[in-house]
Amino acid sequence: MTDIPPLQQELSSFDLLATMVVVVDAEGACLFANMAFENVTRVSRKTLVGTRLQDMLSEPLRLTETLDGVSANRYASSRFDGELRLGAWAQDEQRPVHIFVSQMDGPGSQRFVVELIESAQQARQDRDERNIDQVQATKELTRNLAHEIKNPLGGIRGAAQLLMLELESLDGGAELNEYIQVIVHEVDRLQSLVDRLLAPHRKAQVIGDVNIHEVCERVRSLVLIEHPKGLSIQRDYDISLPDFRGDREQLIQAVLNIVQNAAQALAPRIARGDAEIVIRTRVARQITIGKQRWRLALELHVEDNGPGIPPDIRDRIFLPLVSGRDGGSGLGLTLAQTIAQQHQGMIDVESEPGHTDFRITLPLP
Ligand SMILES: Nc1ncnc2c1ncn2[C@@H]1O[C@H](COP(=O)(O)OP(=O)(O)OP(=O)(O)O)[C@@H](O)[C@H]1O
Ligand SMILES: [Mg+2]
Image (cartoon, rainbow, N blue to C red):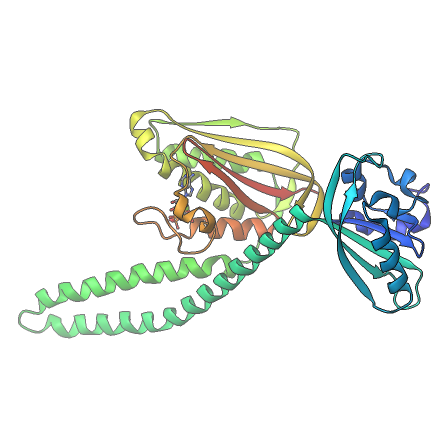
């Protein structure tokens, strides 16, 4: 690390960002560029330092004017749309970008942070953020609702049991008791639903060393016990994956929910005897989860050859109470996603008839 110039060191936290960041002086000359910028433009920062950022934009004047405006304190920051030329200033390949310019160390500073967000990336980020907000809002609503339902349920159950006792001494009471048993039974069902709604927020995490393949093997054997015939669960492991810190039991739960869903979707094929699930692990590098960039991560794929996720619920399967099957409570994936997020990770899915691929991404140290 010693040969990194001090400015680079100071700015190296920009490397954690998924968006491109360049620090320039008032003329637009590059003082620093982050890793995302290097990756997208395929130009090394050594080469970049000293060159003018304007030369990499299709409309250089916009940046010059904006820098003038910001450095004269006419505005603290400014944004505009432009095009970034890729490669060694290639004319042919350009990417539409949103460009944000702001003063780096407050008013009067002659250093400027230029953030460049690819428009496609911007759209995806907006969508991701909206999704996260939506999931958050729904979770909160569900949690509050579950709390509200929980207390009266206890009262209903208690009263029903008292009635049961009273009826025992009455003529014809036995018959009426059956009705009350229905009440108690249904209350218990609601109670367990409410408990499951509240569960992910309640349990404290138990952090230890986790070997992802132990997790996979555990899930595999649990599901095979349930489906001894007609289902094959292949494994394709990258055994070079290191252990990491996490909550083993919770991760088993998350993976189990996903593999169980696959097995449920495969029911007709299990009956025919040609159902297949593949559990695959891989290393991923330089990946973005939410807004954060990670150098190293693991990917755990659960793939099945079932019918695919029903199109009408495809966009909502991670929300609570969304289910496509009879008797499903629609909580399995919500819980799995919560657990992944508690490990700074995420779950996403690609699905078409005949092939569904759930991917759990977890950052590694
Ligand atoms: N591998 C898969 N193939 C096809 N559809 C799937 C798959 N995984 C999930 N789904 C769909 O997503 C829905 C939501 O799954 P989720 O696990 O959240 O709830 P659930 O399985 O219905 O109920 P629960 O898991 O709470 O018992 C499922 O009902 C199913 O329709
Ligand atoms: Mg499920």
